[in-house]
Length: 189
Image (tube, rainbow, N blue to C red; front, side):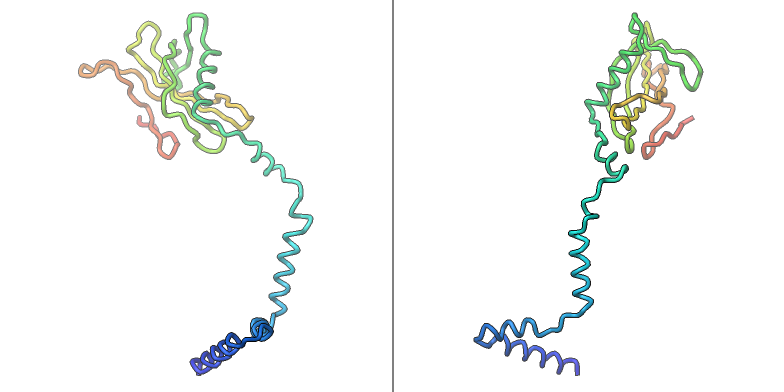
């Protein structure tokens, strides 16, 4: 039964297309009735597209997103260098209280090194090396976290990531206190 109906429909379409009259082609194209639901959907879409609400003022959330500043590697490194320069004394010593041992460390800045990156949203991260004052072999790896939500990067947290340890085989090396798993700290001991 279905096959019979399909054959009849195809024959009617072929008859319309074989006709030499232009008006018969137009009649064949518009032979299907247009439903009210289709017309209502078309009108609703046009109304939404050309409505005054489509050009409304952006919300506070949308405007804050458009004003958000993206920081790059150079920005992060220059912020870190400026931060360290602002915290060192006349002898180029950077003082830091060790969050694990409570010891006050007197360190000399060596460099900002990779990785520096965006962790999430407006939070950025930089990794640096400092050596102990008077002993350039004893190197601390210090991590800094920065917030860029104000439009400029500001350091808000500092942690000793790796501390100097001595080994008979390797001499001084940087021993890690924690590692990162999905940009979250996992303490090793």
